[in-house]
Length: 152
Image (tube, rainbow, N blue to C red; front, side, top):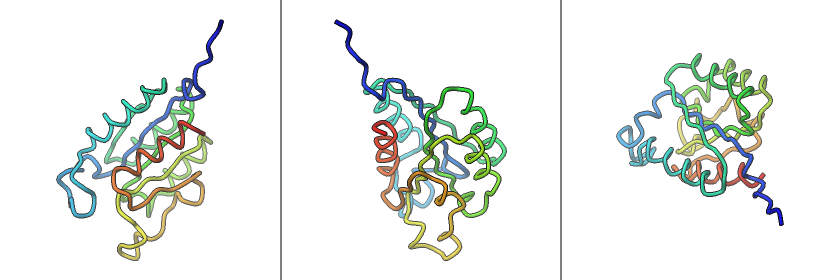
């Protein structure tokens, strides 16, 4: 008797984090929480592994490096992307173009509620082309995005 693997077994998800997110845990913990990026990544990698999926992680403070990583995802079997563009959220047409260019579904995540902050943070270059957005739920937003992609 052949047993089928769960649908998520073939899933390969990429977690991208933009500028300054390497400072999580110490940078403005009243806004972003006290959990570090390595701790968040480890939790998500373990969650993906539990259901037979793969989660690759990448963080950069450089827009071009993030764009290059998005381009590479297309040929690496990535099925979906979770991205927290950080400050690039409000200005990076180039990163947006990379995401739409590879045509992979992605979810935009923000630890803080960008709509309850300074007016310039209310606009996202990504929200209208993302399959969903999670804002203001702290690091748990990454978990919700991952669960959605695993069960999509």
